[in-house]
Image 1 (cartoon, helix red, strand yellow):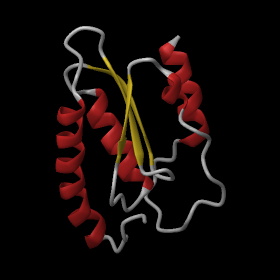
Image 2 (image 1 turned 60 degrees about the vertical axis):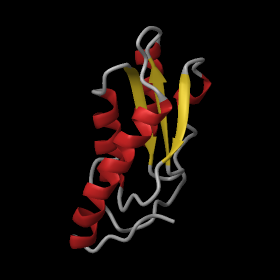
Image 3 (image 1 turned 120 degrees about the vertical axis):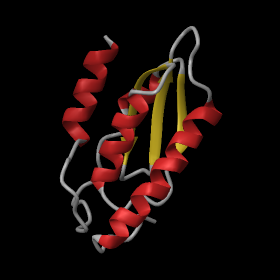
Length: 116
């Protein structure tokens, strides 16, 4: 069931190409937000939708993470921790911060400014 919720939500809001143009329409609210073990964390400084896609993929591969989704439009990450040995908010925040530092230089080199 969780996989079908994620697939449906990704189908609505997923864009893989980097773009400096603003979205014409805000994406749908994140479907994972209603999951009982979800953590909602801010993601500050994304320069493109590619940032959101890559950070989401990185989070999904972290130990103790069952699922993750990142919204460029809302500058938020939604992470579902595992029932046992689940990831902590601090661990996820460190992963996001580290990836944002790496991506900030990359996006700046491509002329993209961080989302406000």
